[in-house]
Structures are given as C-alpha cells and as structure tokens.
Image 1 (cartoon, one colour):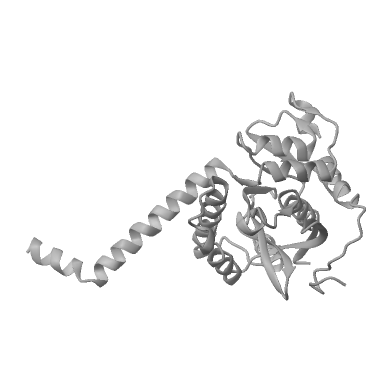
Image 2 (cartoon, rainbow over the protein chains, first blue to last red):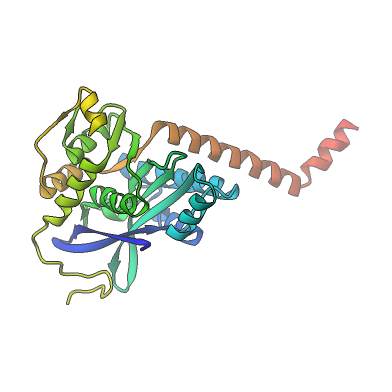
Length: 214
Length: 70
C-alpha cells in the first residue's frame, strides 16, 4: 500500500507511474539525479532543481528530530503514538524505463496536527520537463496519488498555499474559480480528480512491473 | 464543499484530463508554498553556517583564534 499509481503519457504512450514514500536513500538518489540539470539555462528547470534540493534539506531537518516518515507504516505508527503529531514526508513519482525507475517528480507533504495533509512542494523532475521527451500529466497525477493516500489514511482535506503561478493550475484541477492564496481539496474534489483519471480510455500499454512494451 | 460554498469561489465546468495535460505542458508544475520555501532556505543557510564552522574547526582555525585572543 506504499505505492499509488496514476497515468502519464511518455513518448505518446500511456504509462502507469507510481507515487511512493521516499526513504532517506531514495531522497539522496533523487537529489543526485538532479546534478546534470543544475546548470541548465531555463528558469523552470533551475527552479525544479532548487525546490527539490530545498525540500530534501527541509525533510532531513525534520528527520533529524524524528518528525519525518519514510513509509506509510512509519507514518501510521507515528500518528497512532501521538494523534496530534506533525509529520513530514516526501512522495516520489517514477516511471519504468529500461529496467530501472526514472524519477519524474516529487511532493513534499506534512500530515498536520489535525489530520490534514499540507502540500508544501510539488515539483516535476527535469526528466519530465525535457523538450525531447516530455512526460505528460505528472503534476496532476501526483495530486491524484495524494488523493489515494488521503483516502487510505482517512484524511479529509489536502491543502496548500497557492501562488500566482500555481493558482491557475489548481483552478483547472479542482474546477473552482478563483483560487487565491489557498487551495483546498476535500471529498468532492477528491472524487472529481479520481473520476478524471478513471476516464482515460486508451489501453495501458506499459505496466509498472514489466517495464517495456508488451 | 462547505468551505468552497462559504467562499466567493464558484465551481466551473470540469476540464478533461487531456485539457489539463495540455495546460501542464505549457505551464510546468514546479510549485512551492512561499512559507515552506522561506523555511527551507533558512534551514539551508543554517546548514551552510554549521558546515563552515565545522570546516574551520577542522582546519585548526579555532586554535588560531584562541592564540590571537590570548
């Protein structure tokens, strides 16, 4: 139950991506995979690298005081022990590529004291932003993964601060206007997000387990 | 629902996944909460300061400082 699937399109084909809890080692791996992109000229890739590095540092800081989780079971244990605890965790999205998992994005989240889920960072990996082979649908897919996680944990609300750049995305995703500096995803929005993913009619050509084309 | 009903926000016609993906293609999803970003930058600065201090100690700078003070 650590993995939450969603659909993306890579190379014109539908593919199943997986959103899962990142362990410390996975966060380090993800961090290292950014190095080739660190000096890229485009602002969006520079921001993707910077936000991810900062999210990783913030996670390490929380982890050093025992306030971070590396798995669903780990998060559930912490909540069982203290129902008002605040726990940070990073969810990493990957797709299968030539027998290995290629990171395509991440979300930095916090389970808040009142059992809500705060989304602090949502950033695509430069792999998914490439002009040559863009992976489509990673951002909205990650949010769908978080909706699945919220349902498992019976979290009634996902929320976050919206900015001038992100507000239009959340307006489209949630079919609500206007979204100002706060977005809230509750049961009706969660249902709509899940319904939209379900509507993908194309057959799934690549499964997360087999990796290649059938 | 209650929250959104209580605000001035209105529900709009839902967009399809394809439309949403088209939007994401043109407007890449790279978002950070401003407060979280500020906190993370502060943590990064703190780490840098600690590292510099550790490096300085390892290089024997602290001994030199003591010698100067004496």
